Length: 116
Image (tube, rainbow, N blue to C red; front, side, top):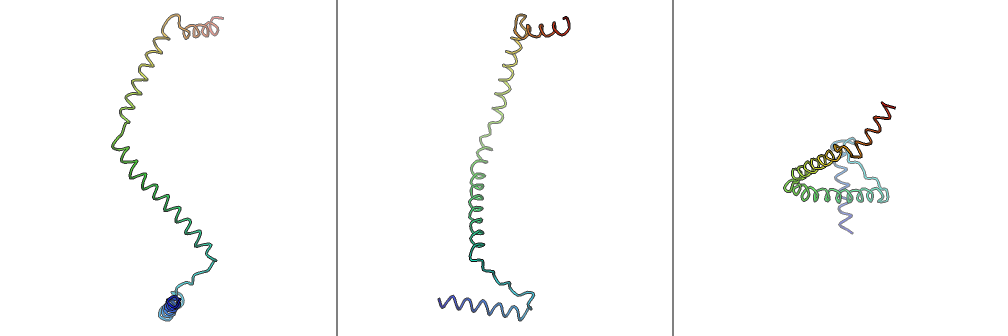
C-alpha cells in the first residue's frame, strides 16, 4: 500500500516537473475515470481481436502452404474437361438420331411455325 502511494507521489512530481519545464500545453493529460467501463470494453475488444488474429495466423500457417503444396487444380480441370467431352459426345449421339425425341420436337416446332 505504501509503495502505491510512493509511485503515485513520484508520478505527480514528474507531472509537476514537466509542467514547470515545458509549460501547461505539453503537460500530461490526466486520465478520466469512467468506473472501468471504457477499460473493460477496450480489454474485451483487444481479447476478441487477439483471438481473431491468432485464428488467421493459424489458418495462413497451415492451410495456405497445404494448398500450395497439394494443389489439385490441374488434375481436377483435366477431369472436368474429359467429363464434358464425353457428355457432349453422348448428347450429340442421341440428338443426331433420326428418331430421337429432340429431332421429333424440333420437327414439330418447325412444322407448326412455318408450315401450318
